[in-house]
Length: 237
Ligand code: PXP
Image (cartoon, rainbow, N blue to C red; front, side, top):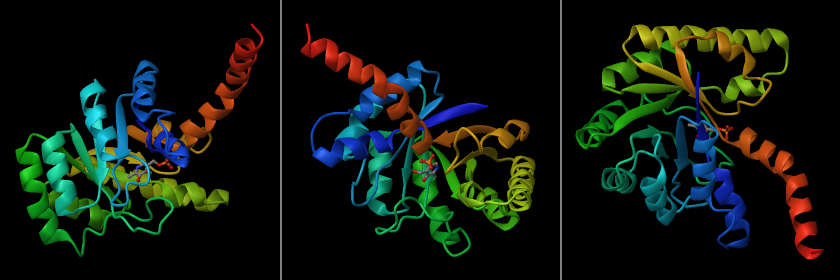
């Protein structure tokens, strides 16, 4: 299974001080060195993490696959066509949310989705839809002409009891199989971490997972000791 790395939270940290560091583009290069199969960034309407200039620089430096997560708006469509990431992932976007809540509402947006996708694919960009792991959503994604679906694992990541967790894994497994049988490639993401990722090793239809927060959270912990040592060496030599 491949790992696509979302670097939004590096930008969040940088933006907390409105300075240059840490640089999400450098982080993307480090993630690629670590074996990431792709770099994911979400250009939000409010630009709360990745900004337009970051996206331009990412396009120049990412050598694996750039996945632009975005809302289905005209502004984003133009940015995507101009920037040409290998892939866009359409997500619903609410200004007040902390992170993406819920999958793309494909039932109520079907006609506009079909029209939205055409020029994007015409520019040579693949289209993924972030959807709930449900049969109807998968069917409509295939019908709309998506290349991939990203199954939303957020609800799974919030389950507490074993039976709820197992039920959610069954739901994801069934949707993944159904999507593959419908001719779609399948990835998954949201809320995945070093513990809850384990059952995904047995869902062979899912070819890639997209992870951000857990990786960046871990990097701050595993990197902190070295950072303190570096500073001590700097001030004492
Ligand atoms: N996939 C999608 C569609 C997302 O919106 C996000 C969050 O930006 C992720 C994956 C990554 O989620 P997390 O940061 O919880 O790993």
